Amino acid sequence: MPKLRAKDLSKRGWPKRPAGLAVTVMNKSFKRETGAWRDATLANLLAHPDSFIDDENWKGVALELGGRSPQEVESITYPEPRKSPGEFRIFKSKAGVAPNAVQQLYDAMRLPIAVAGALMPDAHYGYGLPIGGVLATENAVIPYGVGVDIGCRMCLSVYDLPGDLADNDQSRLAGILRSETAFGLNKHKRANDHAVLADEAFLYLPTAKKLLGKAAKQLGSSGGGNHFVEFGRVDLPENNAFDRPAGSYLALLSHSGSRGMGAALATYYTDLAMKECRLPKQLKSLAWLDVRKDSGAEYWAAMTLAGDYASACHDDIHARIGKSLGEKAIVRIENHHNFAWKDKLPDGRNVIVHRKGATPAAKGELGIIPGSMADPGFIVRGLGNPASLNSASHGAGRQLSRSEAKNSISGSALKALLKKRNVHLIGGGLDEAPGAYKNIREVMAGQTELVEVLGEFHPRVVRMA
Image (cartoon, rainbow, N blue to C red; front, side, top):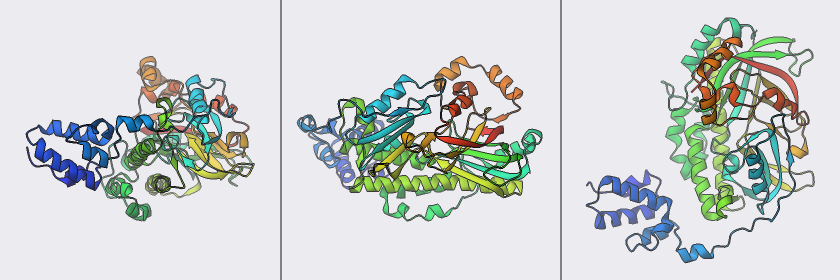
């Protein structure tokens, strides 16, 4: 087998010193082993150094990686969860909120750092916090409370063009989406550029510096799953908030986040949080970082960078499509979720508010809450309700898991529904069919205390992964 080098391990995320030690051990004692055995052993060592602490060959490497002996692990003092959580408000739609989502927020509210919480009417089970969960903490940020797709957001551009183009000019609009959008592992043929790529955080955050190349390649693209770019019709009433004549306008709505960069940052800092904050097994995904310490401050900078990058992706998407249309937006609305904000409670306490799949809805704050590929979305203005920690839903919320949707919704039924509602779909799948989601009008009815509706968006030409 070829000799292993420290720089080979550095590319796999190994810190410099343990990488050098691991190479020495591997080349001295295991040079006859297969490449597959080497790769598996090194990956397991990096992920689980505790398991190698008693191995005479690997003990030194494991210690450098932060491994602890079974006795040390046994003696670790866990942050003591409260016996019962503080009160939190559940905003329900007609479909209700799944019990496992309620249990997740219940568990989060037992953390000693938890101050307040709320569940939005689109809430359903997630990792760490439930999707649609809001949690305020003191001096702590929970990477899984933010989520893997850091800074995921909605962005709406409304054009001074008649809304019936979304119904009558679908072939041209579909062509624009095919040429000007990319999803999943695909990227644009030409190089992308944006001021965010020159952000100094890429220089002083080692974790982000390694991801700059990937971020540059994926700029302006969208993720898989429920992410989309779609043309539709926006209906604005008389005396609307945008001082536009009442009527119907062509609009573009996009939903995507921080792509591979955000996912890599989330994974790295989640692992770090789990090492620094060793919680009981059932709560370990809620491990936090203290924002007063270097690790917490570093995550905060990485989260902020990922959010700025997600916004830059939408900038790029809307700029290219606007250029293809030959139009500039007359209204632009953007709001994000999967993020944490520094805020103050009515009693004056400074807190960090996590919104995992929940939209900021401070008094007067604009947002867009979409439905599904064939259901309307809503332009909203926040009412600033302290019971929801100034939050609202980020969408309709799933009522079927992806596997349940694939097993219970037929392709012919989806095609019939799309035809009935005059929706042209590019990509997408049964796991994103409208039936997989709660009724968006019922969800909106469950949050009349949180937002007021300013207008509606009706999707007509939809592109997904």
